[in-house]
Length: 276
Ligand SMILES: NC(=O)c1ccc[n+]([C@@H]2O[C@H](COP(=O)([O-])OP(=O)(O)OC[C@H]3O[C@@H](n4cnc5c(N)ncnc54)[C@H](OP(=O)(O)O)[C@@H]3O)[C@@H](O)[C@H]2O)c1
Image (cartoon, rainbow, N blue to C red):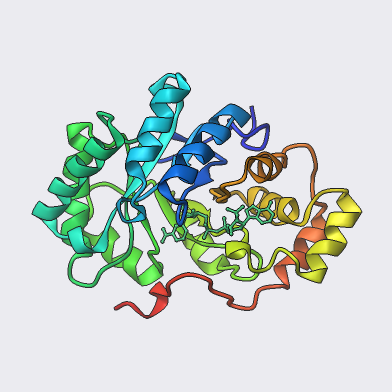
């Protein structure tokens, strides 16, 4: 099965886990709507949920997973180490809190949420321990730019499985993508819909009409065809379904190239490029 076969297709990582290519993001999903969104996503067929300690909804994610009755082993669950918990000892405590909130024995991937200066390398050492303990089946980073990765790789015993970064046609960081590829680090696109702010872009609408798909589906399909893992967020069941309906068409090469020209360094979230 290729990575683009369906929303449960997986991409292998360098750490003997494979990541479902499509997941549900739950940032800014309030607890009750988060619970309902995870239930909806699992019903639709999603098997990958992306949360974080700072989102304040780990408990609802865990509850929804249990209530779904889908075996825990079939669901790829990701959470993240928050900035205030970075450092060796505090990271070891933070994973325990997250596991308690999620009411599970392990996460499938634990990420450093942001490359906090002077803390990130100690945090990574803790994540290596967390992986060895089995509390996380795999470990990775988020918002790491090339200099942060170069620094980490000098000291790391384990190469991150994945780097979760903001990525969409309007923030098309090809240099980072190719760097990660060269190191065997999977790139996961967060805010693949540009946080909802570019869905009505006229150029997207033209392609949507051409392919008889929605604007959101064009943005998501582009990310998939580039080889990224995607975690769009919605709290609406119809959109959760719509976003996942991107495995039955192919954007042709000329249009993929056209989308490459839309990059305008448009960042909707925080900016890690200036972090030393
Ligand atoms: N590691 C990090 O630092 C970091 C940072 C940002 C995000 N993330 C992760 O990435 C996930 C996704 O990013 P994101 O939440 O920033 O933005 P996103 O997925 O790019 O866009 C979400 C926005 O688009 C709307 N939307 C979703 N589907 C739509 C559709 N089909 N048509 C029209 N509007 C639609 C949503 O509204 P409704 O919910 O009302 O549908 C929401 O306002 C997050 O939830 C989080 O898990 C990680």
